[in-house]
Image 1 (spheres, rainbow, N blue to C red):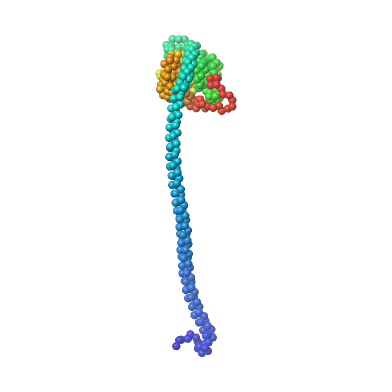
Image 2: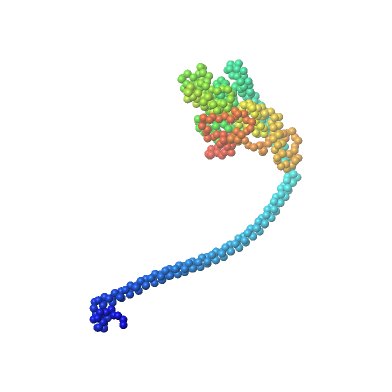
Length: 460
């Protein structure tokens, strides 16, 4: 018989519970049962939630895989279409390439046939015309060279330029080798003290006038502008090929010793003082070496501690003027020899080489010989349309100017690459600031930068 948890009163009364103790006991039993069921429910809930999350993830992954598979299938189809289209394009390109090659071959053969036909027609129908024009050109060139030789001979008579050797017994006490023009000695290198001041101004003035005449008569592009004023001439670098004015007024350099007295060292020595022969400068290397004058210009040529600033500045300006003059002579000499297809003589001074060039230009035979050599060398490289025209055995053919095969000379840094040049050609000042229009920036194909009418390069 099941033992009852009820008290005797509640048990005998046949009721669930009457007393407080039985009621509390029953409530406790129900509470324990409910707590047990609640814990079981929570465990089941957590287990079911985990299963649901796992299933949702699996479903999501499955859907993503199906979507990606669909995209890949579409991309494969698109790739297949593009491959087929590319193959068709390649086939079309190969077909067009073959057609173009065939057409190019036809055009090339047609051009060759046309060129042969043109040459044949020229030889058959225009040989006499070409020969006549060629002979007229030779005749005109011969006449021009003849007149040019006469003019240059007269210029050489007016301004004789030669090399002399002095023994020091003259009144000026000069000794050594000098270049002279019109019996006036030219300075050695960049040394303005190598000749007396008056003779220096006269010789440089003669040289300025000679250069102006040669530049004008030969139509040579001028590197510098030469302002002739007798024994007070000046020189300056052109602002550009089209503008003959200097870049600034201070760029005009004298070719003479200033005659007016300025502030000099201790007020005793000046450019015109009778008690001095060094123009206010106390020391100078005058051994005739241009390179030593060039390298020792700052320390050995001028004693800055014993000369006034104005004397040093005047000395620098005079040397700069002589340097520009020698540059113009050197460039004109190189231009003349290159136009004659001749090499520049080596081992001679700047003015001596220029004198040789003038002698060559004044000799009609030498000019004809030089141009005939240039013509023969150029004709070997030229395609001859008619041998009867180009192989003329005429004496006048030796004077043809080979202008179409002579490379134009420009005033740029290529001058310093000329072989066999005399060291005195290269004249430069290390302590003087280079202006904008240096030789390296000179351009003979320069266009005018303003609307003004350009000046002629040979006019001042």
